[in-house]
Length: 101
Image (tube, rainbow, N blue to C red; front, side, top):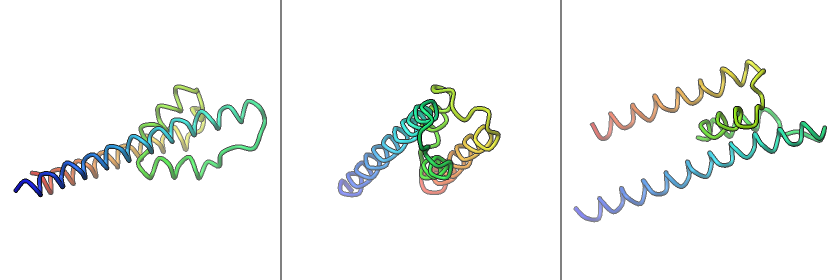
């Protein structure tokens, strides 16, 4: 069935583009918040940073934490962001096993 294969390729491409975009947003949000913190300006709410991670940007958020040395002393981020990533990886693994295995 060529049509079904094409659909899978399109869905995979869309998922890849989404995850790339949301992870870039997570990385940039951490950098932006760090910049604003240094300038003593209004910050990105922590709730927003966590929401970006929950929406799939956990890899970018985690990378941004250590690239910009930002939120690395906040236990909620040091534990929370990797925990979100772990849950997302487990969910992705389960979905792959369930539907492709």
